[in-house]
Amino acid sequence: MSRSERIRETRDGGVVTLHFADPDRLNAMTREMGEAFRDRIAGLAADDSIRALVLTGEGRAFSAGGDLDMLQAKADQGAAAPGVAWRAIRDEMASFYRLFLSLRDLACPTIAAINGHAIGAGLCVALGCDLRFVAREARLGLNFTRLGVHPGMAATWNLPRLVGPAVAAELLYTSRLIDGEEAGRIGLANRVLPAAEVLEAARATAAEIAANAPLAVRATKQALRRTESASIEDQLQFEASEQARHFESRDVHEGLAAIREKRAPRFEGR
Image 1: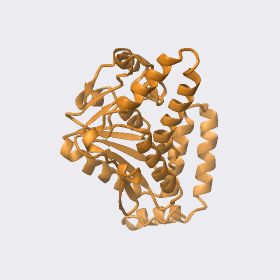
Image 2 (image 1 turned 90 degrees about the vertical axis):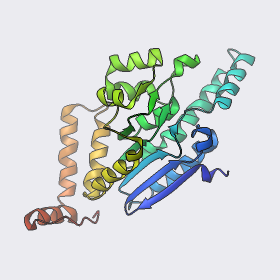
Image 3 (image 1 turned 180 degrees about the horizontal axis):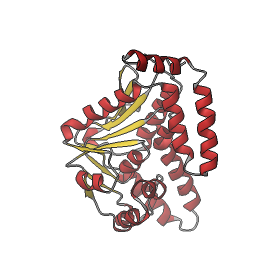
């Protein structure tokens, strides 16, 4: 399988679906897959016609996490030169994380359609999406401490913001796996569905997003991202500035006209 074949892309109008496409290995995350993923994301980021992205896995898993052979190689490297190799390992792991977290570079909303198990780095990628639709029977977990390693791929940054610091601490300390139902109860999942319905539901929500004004949707995503560090006064100013920009667009006139005429709007992103 070539590098590019490890990520499969399908498109329906303004909605793109990316598939982790190594089902025989439960979509284990390798550097080769990460590079293919980064390349796909870079191409999509340059395409203003894309209004939403869905990320899923082929086969029975979303992703079983980091490739065990890669992790073993890092453990062997560290054991062979303790106190010396850690800088090289640090830089390699940080660059590996960024391959998959490149999806945060997309201006459009992203939805993880977690069709099956999402473990370790596999769940970390899903945490980097804006929304998560989870199969009821899926198993999810951040099992880093059970492997004897510190969590990575922004797990300690993303998880507390989704489920709160206490629940995040429990999951990270214990490496406990949870099912889709519990993911919904703790706020990790937006929707919990039978596995066969996850992808269809995620695409339907992506289509709902795509039907809205793309300038406004993208600016809303930017605004939500800013709340990670902005004060309320700073956020108010940002919102007012973005609204002023959108009042200059054709889309706002179309949206208002559609409401008056009781019809669906036809946004052009201008």
